[in-house]
Length: 256
Image 1 (cartoon, rainbow, N blue to C red):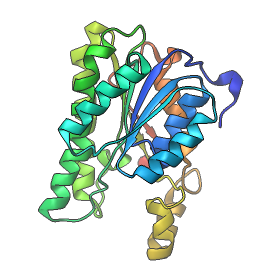
Image 2: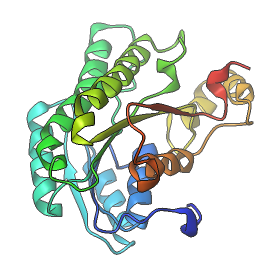
Image 3: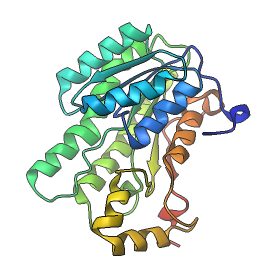
């Protein structure tokens, strides 16, 4: 995925990835596993979770998969507790889950609140006692450039990603004296098999082409682009970085 010489070692680190069975979440989990971390990942789909776990296990480290509905507070608490027990603690938490709420009804807004915002709040809260015992604790929330610039297609999704950004900075301030780093990544348009943009290529080719051609670096980003940034922000090279939201978007949010 990345140059091995440039990739920090995460050997001995215990990493939780919420929403880690596919797309960006899986790429992040895979990058940590390749770098030597023990990884616990959760998702709703048991089949996808099993496939992801099998893939991560090929790297030779500990992999702990748990079926979990991240809209359910009790299930989040149970997953975090099981993960801490299975891995022997928690050093890094990555909150990647999203309801991808693009509809306008109350159900879409509630799903965005529960999954895009409160799942991160609940997961971090449950993990905090374990992070306080870590030698190198870090929290990473996966946001979106939709939180930085308005879009007419996803008001609920954009609103809760913006809330996630503010939560990231306020939590970073709250935990700074404890030296627990809290950052976020705001990906731009990322294409991967069966992801939003892969589906839009068939369902709305005009929109797909327009967004693709508007990205200054040329084309959609890859999940590996986000995973590389995740390893940096959670690793030793970023030890003096907290409360930041890093856009990983090929210049898409610049509006040029």
